[in-house]
Length: 250
Ligand code: ADP
Ligand code: MG
Image 1 (cartoon, rainbow, N blue to C red):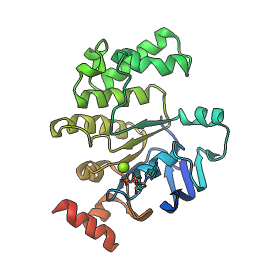
Image 2 (cartoon, rainbow, N blue to C red):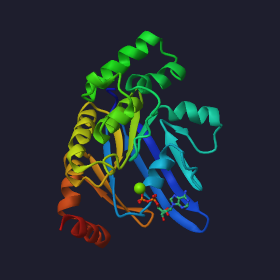
Image 3 (cartoon, rainbow, N blue to C red):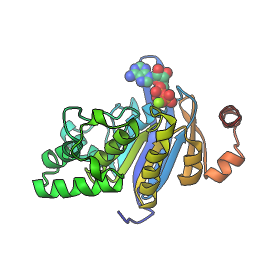
């Protein structure tokens, strides 16, 4: 995972996304470099999820480009898109585990089918990843028998099992009971420290302050302001960001 820090992983150019007459993303041009952790914050309805889904083209942008390691993901064939998309792990608010599969099989399925790992390789990797997320003893369980925090850690491990170049998180702790938030953030913090490139939509300001290289503040379909967390949180420049922070930090 050690990469040239100047390598661009994701670049969006003049990204726009509309749903009918509703222009949700207005004009976004940004770059994510190798090893960077970007935390995207902003009010509900700002377009954060839509933006994240455009990065791996789960939503097709209305116009503009999304380059992943130099390849434009817009307007390419489904097969090629799927191949590139595998390199972008995604974790959602809802864990979306396969309920009829054990934890181990959840982690092995895609590596066996898509990456064509051998059964032995897939199993070794699954156990390694479960250890990494603190769930080595849960491999034989079914998702329904795990807590929300445990399920989300399995979901992270499952995304990592595809050996991604970048991990995209959309409010991964928002659906969790408060006492389970910390265990998921710890896994994400460890991942960030291991050098993983990450784009994280979150309301966890403590995490964003501590782990982000950059905060992107999003409102009304634009990235209104971005900066290092110590600058952004202490001295937000735009009125929009000042207003947002005063509401959430009060
Ligand atoms: P956030 O994640 O910041 O809360 P979203 O990206 O979910 O914001 O939504 C931004 C806006 O886009 C909202 O007004 C939402 O209703 C609209 N939107 C999102 N997805 C769709 C969709 N599939 N169809 C129509 N409108 C959508
Ligand atoms: Mg959202």
